[in-house]
Image (cartoon, rainbow, N blue to C red; front, side, top):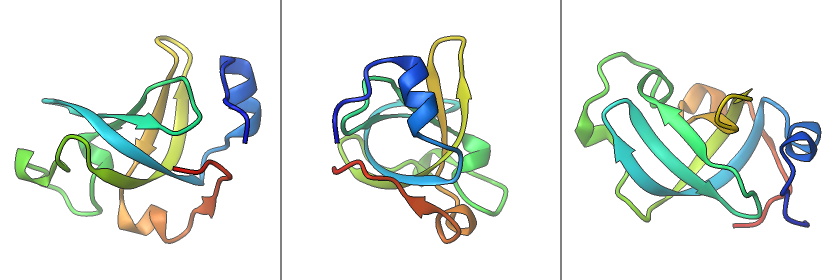
Length: 101
């Protein structure tokens, strides 16, 4: 798949519910940032989107440089960020998107 460089092109191609793989690039108190293969925009997983249960702690964060399975939740035009989830319930219902990682 060609790189998705344009924000509008990305939003037209990638839809909520699509499943992706990414690599954790940064930890923050509110969640993690993820690099997605072939996509020039940053993905973010916030604490409520880590797992199906409440009570996420820093120990639930995947290590930096680790590969993670993700589901697209939404797009944030401000800052051009892709909101993602790692919740098992969403991963099991997701559709694989054609981005190799």
